[in-house]
Each structure stands twice: as structure tokens, then as C-alpha cells.
Amino acid sequence: MLAIVSIVIRVNDLPSQLEFWKAALDYIERDAPEDDWAVLKPRYADAPCIALDAHHSVRVLPPRIHLDVYAEDQDAEVRRLVELGAREVPWDGRPDDADYIILEDPEGNRFCIVDRPHWPGWQRIPAR
Picture 1: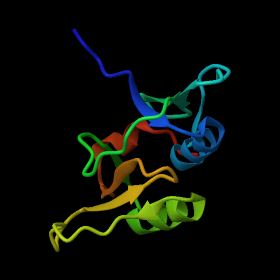
Picture 2: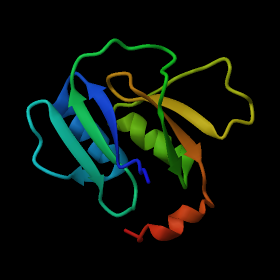
Picture 3: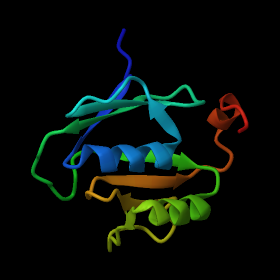
């Protein structure tokens, strides 16, 4: 049996990206960060960890893989993430009825905020 336990994101500025992703996802450090590696785990939910690898890599667009992050209130979450330093990514190919908004973190790593106000998984997450 296999399970996705951690998703690795390459970053240039580990301390800055660590603060962004902690605030964005309400994750906490699993262990003390190393100089070039940190793992964040969910504070409340049963979800994969996010590992940040301070290792330069060439940015490819469109990316071959990205995160889909579900939101109960998509508009509020997009505003909050933009205030944290994310940027909205315009895309001419996005359908008019798309349930996602494309963002990128402060270093350009892309992720989508997907509108899922009635997702059954929310029942597993304790109220804050």
C-alpha cells in the first residue's frame, strides 16, 4: 500500500517561504527546520505534509504539478492569501464556470484555490 504523506516544494528563500506556507495553510513545523529543509504538518486536519526544499530549480510554465487547495469561502481565502504575498495568475484558458482560481506563492510556485463550500471532508476538521 502507498500513501502520499508529504509534498515537496522547491524554494529559494526557505525562511520566507516557511512563513508564507505556515500562514497560508495554518500548518506548523513538524520538526525544527534545517538550513535547507523544513517539513510543515497540518495543525488540525488529516492531510499531507508540505516539505520545503531550499534547492534552486528552473521554473517551468505551466508547471507539471501543482496543489489544489479546497476552500469553504474561496473569495475570502484568495484575498487573505494575496495579503500574505500570493499573486493571482490570469489565464486565458480558464473556463467561465471554473471552480478554481490560480495563485502563485511569493516565489512563483502555483496552486489553485478550489471552491468547495460543501465538501464532506470539512466534517473531519475540528472548528477553530
